Image (cartoon, rainbow, N blue to C red; front, side, top):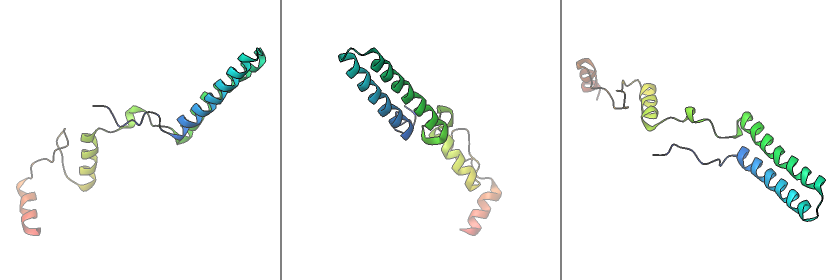
Length: 108
């Protein structure tokens, strides 16, 4: 099953792609006009789009790397740990001990 990626739908990705798209448009227009300096300027704008995307990602506007995405089992363990419940490796709550079951019977 695929991870929780959203296929680059982030402000950093969209900004970089839009700037690169504009650069391709500039380069294409100057290619038709046979102006090599204009084509080079378009290539510079395309490169600028990549740099802007990387800078925005570094500023926190991009998608986090894959190692920061938690699997459902990891999320369940984290939630259980926050609630004070012991879990097994797959995120299932561990069986209650006799003192825990006695406390739950008394309190609830």
